[in-house]
Structures are given as C-alpha cells and as structure tokens.
Image (cartoon, rainbow, N blue to C red; front, side):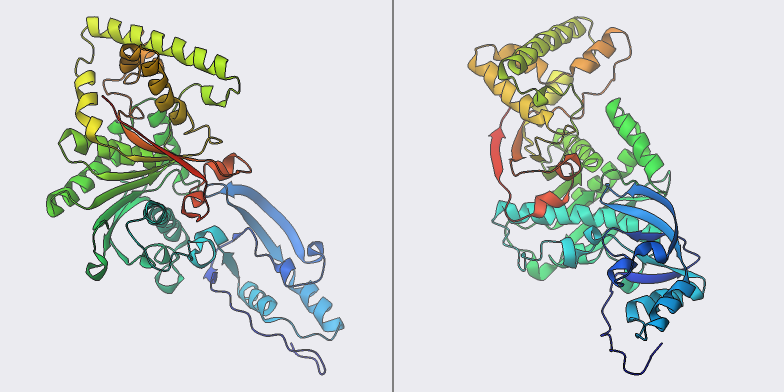
Length: 440
C-alpha cells in the first residue's frame, strides 16, 4: 500500500521468519509485530490463545490472530506506506497461513559463540564451548524436526558447521521418533592434535509437544536409577560401541546436558568397564540428593554430610553381608581411571550436589576417616534405604563417580533457569573454579 508523499521503508532481513500452511502458532520471545508499529498491540492483537513455556523455558508459544482491517485502517488513514514486515505478515495471514518466528536462543548468529572464529584445541575453554555447541545442535535438530524446518530453513547445522564438523548420524528414540542425540565427525583438514575425530552429543529434556512425554518419563527413570533399562539407553550405548569399534576408541568425545549428561555418563561408565576411556563433557549433570549444598551454615552442612556418610556406609556394610550387589566396589574401582569433565552451577539444585559430593570426600580423608567415605561415596543413601525394604536397583547409582574434573561456574546467575541452561557454557568470560578429584 503506497500513498503519495509517504516515506519509504527499507526492507529488513528476517532470516528466521518462515511461512508454513496450516500452522496456528506464533513462536517468539523478542520478535513481535508491536516492534514494527508505534501503536498499542491491543488494537491489532485480536486475542491471545495460549501462553506456555517451551524448550528449556527460554521462549514462549503465543497463538494469535491479526485483524487486517485494523492494519489497513491505521496505516491508510495516516497516509503511510505499510512497512515490509507488516506486509509480510498480512500476506501470509490473508492466504490462511501463519508465521513461525523462532527463539533467538536457537539461532547461532545471535546466541552462539561468534567470538570463536577458529578453534585452538589446546585451550580447555574452547574445547568446552565446542562440546556445548554440539549438544545445542542435538537440541535444535529435534526442534527442526518438530517444526518441519528443512534445507536452508534448518537452524541446527550452523551449530556444528562453525567448528568444521559434519553430521554423520542422528540418534532417534524408538518410542516417539524424537532425535535425542547426534554423532558428529570433524572434517579431515581440521583433524589435528587434541581435536576429537568424533563427538557423540546427547540433548536433555525438551519440553516440546512431540517429545516432552518421553523425556519426562526418562527423567523419572533416572530418579529411580533405572535409566539403563530404557530403549534410549540401549540405542545410545550401541551407537557409542559402533563408533569405538570403527575408530579404535581414540579421539572420541561424549557430551551431554542434563538428562543428556546422564546418558553420556551411562555410556562412559560402560565403556570404561571395557577399558575404553572416552573424554566426556557433562553439562549440568543430575545428582539427585537432599539439597544440602544450599544450606548456608557450614557447620550444619558438614554435620549432615558426615551423618549421611556414616549411615550410607552402614547400609553398604549390611548389604554386603547379605551378598547384595557384591561387584559394586569392584566396578567402582574399575572405572576410577575414567575422568569425565563435569560443569556445574551452584545455583542449579539439579547438579550442585556434585560440589559437596567431591569436596566432602576430601574433607573426610583429611579427618582420617576416609574408609567410611570410601564406602559412602560409591553408594546412594536413598538407594540404600530402598534396598533395605527390598526395592533397590541391581545397578550402581548412575550419578556416583569415582573421579572427575569438576568445574564450577561462579559467575553471577539471575535465576535457576539460567543456572541450569546450556548457553552459559560457551560464554567467554566465565569465572570457573576447576579441581580434579581422583579415586584412590
């Protein structure tokens, strides 16, 4: 619509805007028609149907209809050319289409580590950033699938292409056909010392309509220490075994976030029992326990941990006398040479207990009662109580690790959502405290 004497609006670029027939949802966090109009949204927003958190809580789903008559009346009466952005919306809606605008957190050019123009594999922070980005790619691969984004509209490829990886396989859950992981291979010209040849990345819980039910079910299995019984675990470990068999087990990374960290831990532990030690990057790995780490009083915190260690060690001895799970101690020692890299945030109660888990072990050794902690560190207090009533798991608790390199993000964090988010781990200015813990 053009009126004489009206200003011309430049045509902006909207790479993340797509039209798709019969799609009724407008997905956005920061892109809204009110940004294109100096006019109250209530005059053209006919109704807001639903508003719900989605995809790690970093965006919203907003369904609405636009009243084209209001647009025409507002712009036409003022003799102003309709901006291209609004024209784009109007055209799509007039043909019974809707607009899908993705969250900026999914777009690499907005939220990715653009400072990382070239990767120097000798630097730990760059290795950490690459591993986190490949896990992010696993998340967005399933988002692309659910939103039917293909070819140039797909958002996931940018997250692995910037560091010269190729996607060689997606890992698909047989229960809901969701993509829960991916296998990436570094292109040969860039395969140098300290660089991985393969990276197997696992995403965490994705609160999208086609995957949330399955993911929450697996979260519940994880709490019950029965993740190893799921078909997703079988698919994951078989994929890892195939890559190890094909490449000889060298230069292979495991990476995961949240539930994906648990999956990577499961695969890493199993391969370590076979003598294959894979480098692992575990972001916000779940540690289900009483939130002792959140107690501010150090004396109370230390006292509770000592009491917990004594009780856990006692239950472990009683279970050993009953000949329940006699191989736990042996398996714990067997995998002690596997040293995964854990990345936790003290404001994230899902993973923050790893801080006290390793630090308390060191304190107990300094007190001369390391033998008690040696029993406690490889047994879960909750699992011990369940075993006492005949409901314990036949598998050692997945979250208990003999050795690790623990990195704690001490940077200011506004809320739990940010503390548990994956995006923090590729930021260039993190204040990290890193310590290595080895099981003797």
